[in-house]
Amino acid sequence: MYQKLDLDKINRNEAPPQEEPARQYYFMAKCRNWVNAFTQENGRPPRACVTTFGCQMNARDSEKLMGILEAVGFCPTDSEQADFVIYNTCTVRDNANQRVYGRLGELNRYKKQNPQMKVALCGCMMQEPTVIEKLKKSYPFIDLIFGTHNIYKFAELLCASFETEGMLIDIWEDTDKIVEDLPVDRKYPFKSGINIMFGCNNFCSYCIVPYVRGRERSREPKEILREIERLVAEGVVEVMLLGQNVNSYGKNLDEPITFAELLREVEKIEGLQRIRFMTSHPKDLSEELIEVMKQSKKICRHLHLPLQSGSTRILQQMNRRYTKEQYLELAERIRREIPDIAITTDIIVGFPGETAEDLEETLDVVRRVKYDNAFTFIYSKRTGTPAAAMPDQVPPEQVKEGFDRLLKLVQETAREQVAKYQGQVMEALIEEVNESDASLVTGRLSNNTIVHLPGDASMIGQILPVSLDECHGFYYTGYCAYKETK
Ligand code: 5AD
Ligand code: SF4
Image 1 (cartoon, rainbow, N blue to C red):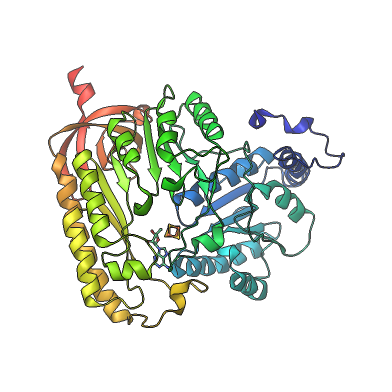
Image 2: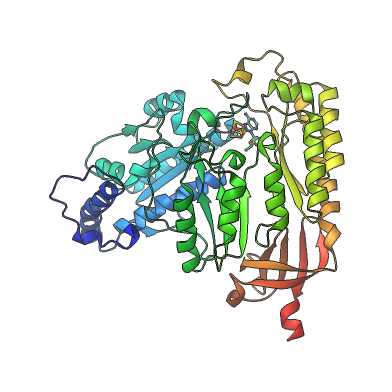
């Protein structure tokens, strides 16, 4: 409803409203003063670039940032030689932080060439006090800094930064607020991420997320369903329900509801064809969820089930609250109940105190579960987390060796798993024209495997039967079986 508001009808001379999201629409209207003045002065509207680091949650947040920038009159661009550049940062591992610092130097050069340029930083990394200190000291050219909890106030902060000289910093410690109905600029017309919850309460001992994203908050189911219905009306056929731990969705709502119950409701939305979700914590994955997935016609045959380690001793140190055996039992049950499902995972190598035997346990789980894909990470020490203070940080050479062994094994099992479907016809959602060969399009199977096939842009957004001719490790080449039979 709000997204269709005519911003020019908002009276910018009155005091801003207190309630949300009306307050943000007021500031969007106010930002237009700056945009209009820029356009008059330069003979063109200002260009804005949003650069995303990190996970799907950040990608979704970036769509919201761009939605607001477009609503106030910026033209989107992928080039950082723009008039407004915002980095939506990640801090889950230290290399994410280093990448941001590395690129800030470049932004400073662009800003010297274009003194009107504004640079902003937001997201998880900004929730760390040491980062803010470093930015204040070494990167004074930054105009605006805010965190994860007040991202819904972007329009207001943007407006304030237009009216302020120097660096404007606004970081909140936490929030229990969820603001609905702000503009979003979606990257794909046919698929979309949907936040169903924010934050995390798990405090895995290596992980900084609970500190930078705050406590778990679930959106009301009716808000989620309303958003998906609206997206479907706009042409979306696939949704990805997003949360750090979707399996604990709804527990803290006034009227509690389980994630499985939410899925049942989403399934009923007419016109919606595919449902994905991310991420599941093994400790909270219920029988009910397996049952709902098994019966569903729309839930994709893919489950991302982070293992982190296969050693019960390390899992305990990680505060994961499951054992190797419990995880294996769960994975086996899922494969038994839903045989065509793809299981993917996250694994960390080099957690403090990890021994060669612990790594063997992890390799053993990989061999047994036969992951369809796995993201492997080298443990990164995050200041403030319990693991950072643990003794026996593993020497880098040992970590590297273990990491290489794990990666090799993971690639072997993934190849084997992906190849299982060679020669079959499966449905693929056609997502884009292939980047390196314009005579091909790229589709995604329900189990998340990629397939390249001859085609053109007219097929984008359609779910088509595709013959999986040849497996090339992690992807297939094939052809559209539908056209063939016609
Ligand atoms: N070091 C390495 N990997 C980490 N992850 C989270 N925190 C760390 C860390 N400190 C990984 C976990 C998680 C994924 C998103 O990132 O595997 O599932
Ligand atoms: Fe981090 Fe664990 Fe929460 Fe995932 S579940 S975000 S790894 S604390």
